[in-house]
Amino acid sequence: MNPVDTDEGTPVSVKIRERIQAARKRFHANDNIAEFIQPGELELLLDEVQEKMKGVLGSLVIDTEHDHNTDKTARRVAKMYLKEVFQGRYVPQPAITEFPNAEHLNELMIVGPITVRSACSHHLVPVIGKLWIGVLPNEHTNVIGLSKYARLAEWIMGRPQIQEEAVVQLADLIQRKTQPDGLAIVMEATHFCVGWRGVRDLDSKMINSVMRGSFLKDANLRREFLSLIAQKG
Image 1: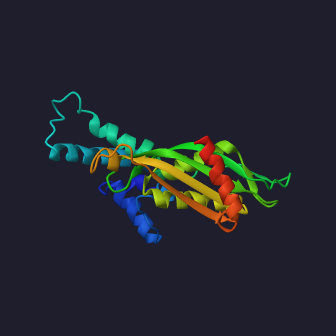
Image 2: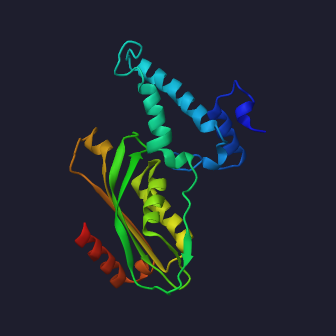
């Protein structure tokens, strides 16, 4: 039975949360919960978030009824969160076509820089930067199109994130999809929780990396990857 048509007095967020809890799954800020959202519920969730955003604006003592600049802000913010900046929580993983490594490619491949946009899960303000992905395939590695790496990165980053965790999530996903001998990811980003508030340091950036397989074991391969992305930065 479709829960959209029943329990009309129960907020849709409660229905979704109950399904997740019944399945004993997490629903942290950077988790994807698309499998627990049924058709039509995302629009209902948008309406619910809109109403709660109106309450937030009211508590900030903003007269949205008479201020033409903010009379539609609650709807805009709800739509931005659910369908744009946090979309990676609410939609399934993008379809990725995989091909066998027919030519037995085994040389270093680098994709990047890929522009990434996320939000700090501490303050819900932007994290914007770029990342590079290095892959050392083997004869059993699944080959995916270059643009697909960007799609996977966008899906992972489109959630409230901590940069260190986001890079690990992306590495885990690519590792599962392609099964390479080696995988390396480097991300560099500006955090608005540092530049917009707090110390307000606009020049500060965070750089972190994940190295798997051959990149972890082979220092020469690691140096080659880091040297090549430095030249293209």
